[in-house]
Length: 280
Image 1 (cartoon, rainbow, N blue to C red):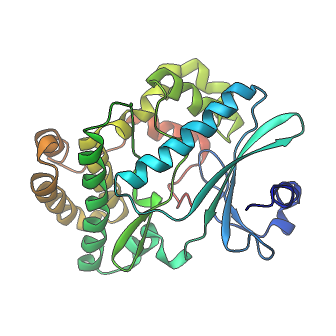
Image 2 (image 1 turned 60 degrees about the horizontal axis):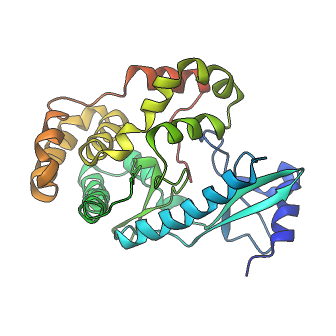
Image 3 (image 1 turned 45 degrees about the horizontal axis):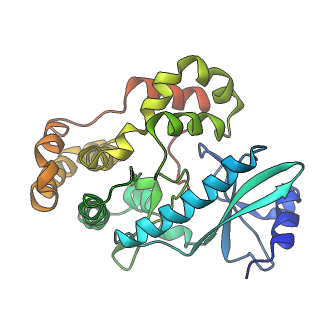
């Protein structure tokens, strides 16, 4: 059982006491891994606190349902727990997740390994994407998936997914759009975002579209290794027809050339200083 008092004390500690910050460039938080103590084998993800208790409890319930859905859909994941900590008058969402070896993260491996090895990684990630969406076809709940290269690790030839926030289940499109603003770690996004609510809301659309999640994966690989873009496009086209037949036509249409990020999202990323580093 998690010692919530110890977890709260760790979160209140200054950055030096916390230990290693895994990434400072995440949209929702900067995950960290404690250097020592009972959580030294865990990555801690702390999100903005909520003063609305009902909203916080709904978030907890949706996160539990989302983790259960990912597992039911055959998505390999590290052990993941969600907690609400009462701190300074707010309910603070905290995810405690089994730490993955840094050298297992997919993005740096995609940058460093020879092309044939990276194509094996793409196949491993693609299999997770296809398996999940084939499962999700039979579900009634609105459910999404964000299988970007930076949200995977590769261990023993298997793709392991580790991004469970926000929980892409049950929330309507408008509700999820508001969550993208509510939980943004960047104050600038919370200030400017409401003025462009429709565009912010649109960020999520790829996550709820089976063909677009595959196209997004291929686009990320092409941007990481532009000299090998044609190989990733060839793989994506073949994979869509082999493993994602119900969505192949739309996926193929998105891979006639190197997929590009939407202009508004590229603008947001530059504005916020997000460069696509691993979001562990």
